[in-house]
Image 1 (cartoon, rainbow, N blue to C red):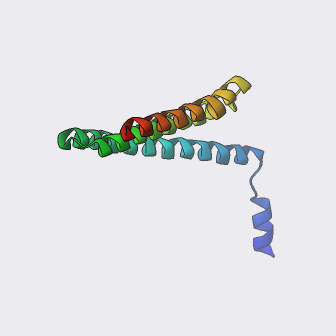
Image 2 (cartoon, helix red, strand yellow):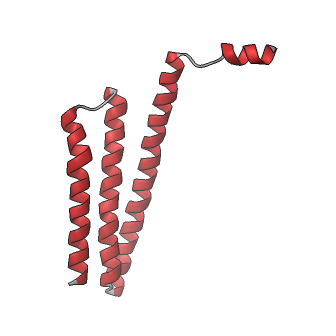
Length: 117
């Protein structure tokens, strides 16, 4: 019974929940930064390899992965804005939820058309 009471007394308060949320947002930013950096390094190596081997296939893949790097970067930016401001306004939400994904899809289609023609 004593352990049960200790667990109930040690439940997080609202302030503790804010700390957990802040840590999660920081964690999201860190994971996105690592992913973005990893992809950017891989894309650079892929471009060098594609140019050295004169491979359009590899260059096309590097182009598609460049769009992924852009998307990870914008997601990292969104997480940073949310953690800094406590949320995002409607205009920023529209940009993040409509404009950027539309750009990503359009760029991927453009890269695919360019590589296949």
